[in-house]
Image (cartoon, rainbow, N blue to C red; front, side, top):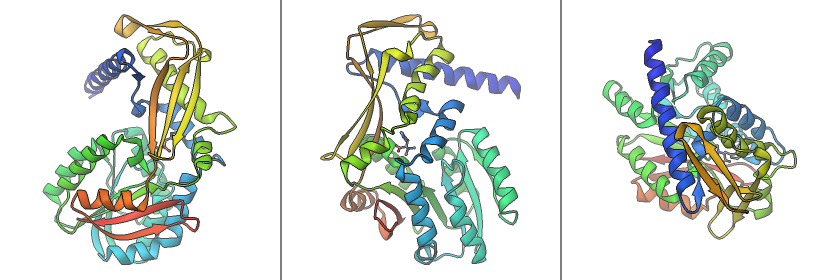
Length: 323
Ligand code: AVI
């Protein structure tokens, strides 16, 4: 078992190295944002969710607390499997779980995540707070887990994909992801999906450029991780965090910009990467959406929009789609 884990780690380290090579050799340079989330990145993201500027988590929490009854009514099933993609710490999901339990609905909660650590922490906290909850954690890739599930459960599925995680895909990746997700669902299954809505560009930009510099550290942690795991020699003080927001595209993008001409060597790749002064690495997209964008996406993938659930300020929406 231990060897298997070591083998898996080696494979994913190799994949990480290859993706870094590809991104740093490209013009313009980029790095995939999913590598933000090592243990340090997870802890920094936890801090981000508590920052005054980062309204997303609070807004979605307000959606769920204010609209839980309406959501349950629109879903309209009392016996189902509740599946969550990328559950995190469960802070927001607990609102729904508690409500469904109070209403004595007959459901199992199945959070899917590739991190055993995340699932273990979640399971422990749910066992303490909601001991009556029936739950089965699934450590796997999303689509692999969903295809297994369809084989042994006949009950309708309600899939949760919250937090505006869909926004961290490029529009092409989002189309690909939604296509796969739709293909893994049966007629009548539901998807409750969170979208951060287009709003004042100042407000959006501030969420990715906080005064305390936590998002800066989150972004720079990507270079720190390359140093630590791949033997890189990035000088962190030689790169600056630079977020932008394009209100036309609804795209918040983050970059790391080289302060000077420099070379960075990465041992695992035995390769040096040259940076010109002011050359950028594109590290993340956080796409924002209009209600029309959401409707178009749903219809394109064969869903009917059954309900749109907002917070009071209408900054965030959890949208219920039925296949
Ligand atoms: C996880 N995801 C929805 C966050 C976002 O808002 O795009 C990640 C994040 N990046 C910087 N701050 C937060």
